[in-house]
Length: 431
Image (cartoon, rainbow, N blue to C red; front, side, top):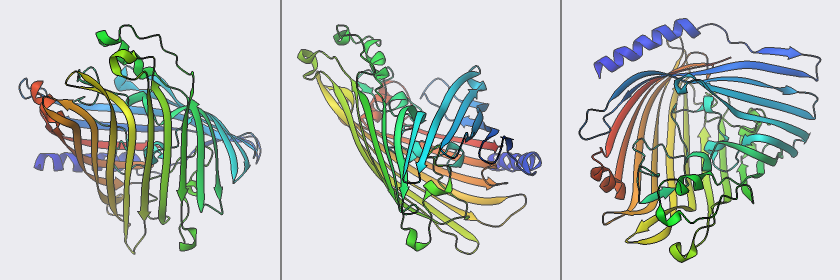
């Protein structure tokens, strides 16, 4: 642990030299009503990854440029706003991805329309800006499963439509949204393309029983998402929706003491994500995922300290298929999470320090070797050092994963560890 501490302190010293200057944004301005802002954000990691196999000596130490993001946002007029982001991942052979691109029609604060590739308004995680998260590797409801237990083909007895592209942060669609009574209520009602990409995994992973399935009928229907947030504005707190641009609809997990937070959010989700199955084999011909979630966030500046808490629960029905003693069944998934941070709101050295944590528990219906249910608990400890707010930040993160029940049995059968501890050093910049 001594070596780890020395490494982190060294990173702090180098980072403070790199990022201690002012941060500005570039703007192209035609007039007071028409303008565009340009910028670039960057995520860097040093990763120390634990053994994944019981035998075999797998272990990694690596430096990683996780993301380089170029963005533009602005407005043609007060009515017509726009934004777009392109992500490159040098660690993934420089692949370029369109993250988001949309137009927002701002008729009234209470009535706006966003259309394009946009955030899916269900979980708080999906609405959170990734450069304003307390835990650098935060996942929200998306399973961060380093052993691949919760998906095919790693587990031949369990197929999950839960993670990956089926519950993305952004998708192509349209949202009706707005704030009521100065942020007392913030609502999002969204329609998105139906995504059955998960079916390709089923059809192409050697499942003989699925070889007679009919071709995909993607985009035959629509995905439905609804999210509403309530903020008791009479207590002197502002709605997260009013603290950031309503053009993109994102929120932040912390305001770093600049504004108190207290918001309760609820969401609903529906999508048919698996179809055209042989009913004589499975007893059903389709799988329609239905979900609901509830979460709450709190942050308040108390003299020199800023405590922050976030907690939530996600319930998703019919997220996957699993086989129990030769019989195919529909499975549900549940996620509980609790997160917190304590920020010291004074500069120490070059920035402001904070200590945080996150606990996540994922349970999915399943069966393996006499044991029901796949479980994964994740505990995270993080030290954040905000050199210039979120625009220049360094973090040390330690992750501990513990698999249980059927997941533990499966990993043992694959000669894999059921407990892992990884640690990361993280740097982000925003311009």
